[in-house]
Length: 257
View (spheres, rainbow, N blue to C red):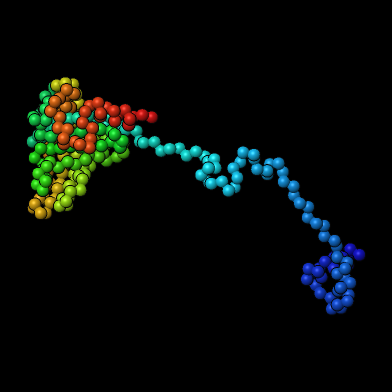
């Protein structure tokens, strides 16, 4: 009986076929009964939690699996923080460190300086520099480039040099207005015990209609502007903090954890 039932199953599945149709039909009647598949009961674990959001709930309303950590701004290098502020600039003919003695008396007013410099850390750190005599003949105004560190944290190079890029806002007819500034802290302090920055200013500008294609290269010394100065050229720095209080405020924001 068991063997006939197996043959019947094979015939039903098409594995074999009998030549005698009547015999095949009789054998088919001997197939093993197939037990119905038992339905799996849903376990309690598979039941949706009472507080689970329905499937049709918008994805943005479903709880996130992992909270993404917000990217924090890079921490400003402490050596840059130490030199932030307002400076009066003076051109020098040779290496700005040559003949620089402790107690150096720098200009205390813009009227006695050949330029002005702002270094702030309003994230990202930035600044600006203006040099007397370096002007756009098309507008009659001093070139007003923005000064940006070469890296996000304003970290100096291994030899202590801060490197900045100069970029100028777009002006009609001005085909080029770019440059760079390098600064480092001199070993000597000025007459008020403040750091002196020494370095080089380079700026290249092109304005064909005015037959301008000039590269300025200046050796510079920068001394802090006195907090009480009444001669700071605010009009030259409309997009940058121009008081010690404002600059200190940007530093506090930049140094927050």
